[in-house]
Amino acid sequence: MPTPTDNYPQLRPVPSQGTSTGLTLGVCTYNRGPAIVQTLEAICAMSRVGGRVAELIVIDNASTDDTPAVVDAFIARAASAPAPTDAPALPIRRVVEPRQGLAQARRRLIEECQTELVAFLDDDVLPEPAWAEAMIRVMDQHPRCGVAGGKVRLNFETGPTKIALRYASFLARQDLGENELLVSEPTRSLVGAAMCLRKPSVIATGWLESQSMPDRQGATLSSGGDNELCIRLRRAGFEIRYTPHAIVDHLIPERRQTVEYLAKLGAGIGSSIPFIKLLAHDNPTPQWAQTQLRLAQTRQARAMIFEWRREYRPIRLAEHEGRVEGWRRVLEKLSGSGRESGHAKRT
Image (cartoon, rainbow, N blue to C red; front, side, top):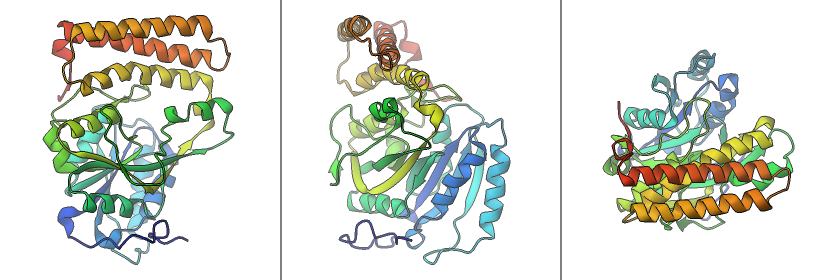
């Protein structure tokens, strides 16, 4: 069993700075059922970083299956399990968020946490033992860092299929290299499958009051919430940082490797890209959006004419269709007809 510092022995130990700089681990889930257990087990196996990892909160986003019972049973078992050597047993609680949507669940998580740092961990990732320590280290070393992330490896249940490897980025694969870096490009962000945020920084962006992008809701595959958070933090003057020492495996079942699933996912990603560009733009105008819409329509037409590879065509066309629809909505918003609905307001 590797120790928490095996991945980066060259770095100095993380100093204990009290609960004010503690980290709350959060998992937002919807109808994950028994499959969530392996994620919760991996989280509980992480280093507690001398007690700085304060709590695990599972946000149940109005699940309709046996997820609540599965999580509650895990909490009961964990309470009686032997504690790790570096801290007391990790407190775990389940919180129900009745409003559907990943953005709503994440907002509830931030509201519930009592620490300066909060981590988003998807309910299908397996963090390595050193993940939390690597995140705390980045936040300690860079006080202006608003969000940090690391490597996200794809762990395929079967295969992988050729098409899944081709569209690995759709499945949240993230590898920005072997060096820590500042992510500074205006529209570039970190994937939300595993990231650590500074709560006061998020509050300063106004994201808790309103979101422009609803992100995933139930079984839908809309996306873009991760990008919105990163762009808002960057525009508010905070840093986005990557470290290769924080590693998670993202579990990919066979059904997520099909052309049908990837096409649906591509449509959601495509429709979010225009809104990401809108958020990052300093002075967007209807004329700018109209130009972008025409470019998207041209690219869609070219793909319809020239993309005849059977396995790629449905995905490419779905992504282009999503982009065209996204730019139409951005144009409507900037032209005034969608101005009132520009944010997913808090209810």
